[in-house]
Image 1 (cartoon, rainbow, N blue to C red):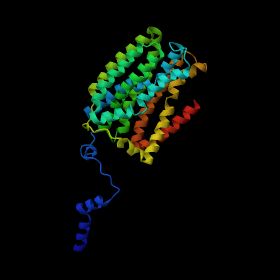
Image 2 (image 1 turned 90 degrees about the horizontal axis):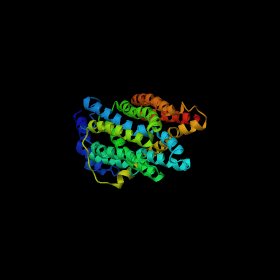
Image 3 (image 1 turned 30 degrees about the vertical axis):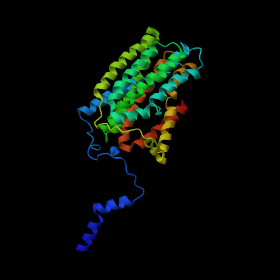
Image 4 (image 1 turned 120 degrees about the vertical axis):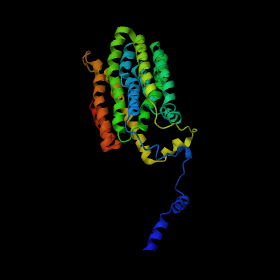
Length: 339
């Protein structure tokens, strides 16, 4: 019996495990800067005053950024009947397409790069730089009358700033919640739905009453106030970990087939996600829908999405994020084809 206990204890000694791991050629040792402490990184507050204030700040950030993206159809309709009437619809669509791409497309110069800035310096600098750039782009758009001016101010300048605010607003909540993460993401994302309800009606009415320029200046000042709230409330629980740029950080995920398929699936989802939002107003007018109803189509879509975001977030905590995503993606694809 004693001999058996000695053999068991010797087989579970830490130095034996170390010898095995050192001899294994398949284990890749990460740099110490990338190692995660099991105590400080996995003990999530799951609530509390500071955590919920971050959620409130993120809600306002999503209202201003993704909320405006969900009503780009209003801009397309205005451009085609207003200052860019001489351009074909395909050329005009480049404005809103690039705007969406630079904010949420995940390109090397925008989303993924903002993510690296967030990891290295936290959300504070993203907000303090991104919010003024975003508002400045909107103000420049209010003065724009030519195609290249609108393209530069709306598709490039403002979308770069909004991408920074969007990244900080959405990512900061991950350090405060784990078990409730889906529910919290749904609450934060409901800010974009609220923006998608208010902004299309606001833009359509003010375009006719005050003109394009003063409408966007009004929106710019409103966004400045809302994003000031985000700048005050949003913070990360974990300290930033600056590290130099390394191409291997981007190459590592490309070696995993599961990760590649996940990225490709997400790419296809976002590729088709904005088609109804961009063209439903133009398509409705071409199909003879009442002019009194057309301005309310986007608010109706975003109003329903408000319910969907909150429900899907809570459901993801129960059945898992990927299972929930599969159901939503299939359902969305079917509805888009029917539309």
